[in-house]
Length: 102
Ligand SMILES: [Zn+2]
Image (cartoon, rainbow, N blue to C red; front, side, top):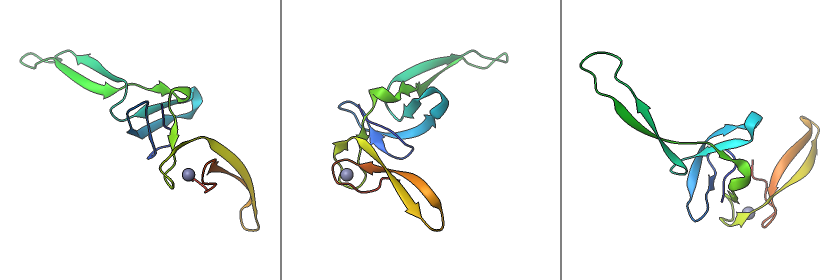
């Protein structure tokens, strides 16, 4: 599977855009993946109950990153950047093409 940060793509066989990241739970929500239905009861008389389809969160281990630079499925490496303006910063790099992902 794929996925990682908002805007990136992932999925096992499927690709989807990550639309939400829940870092505290290490979960991501990927568009079109892990679809669930939510049933909404009518709240007022005359209203109809609805079935709302929504993507349920997936654990990050279930998704894989597709590098936005080289378009390959990849793993993420980390590199420490040391810049004068920003100080030390950890950036994510694609292990295949070695480009910064963020
Ligand atoms: Zn890459």
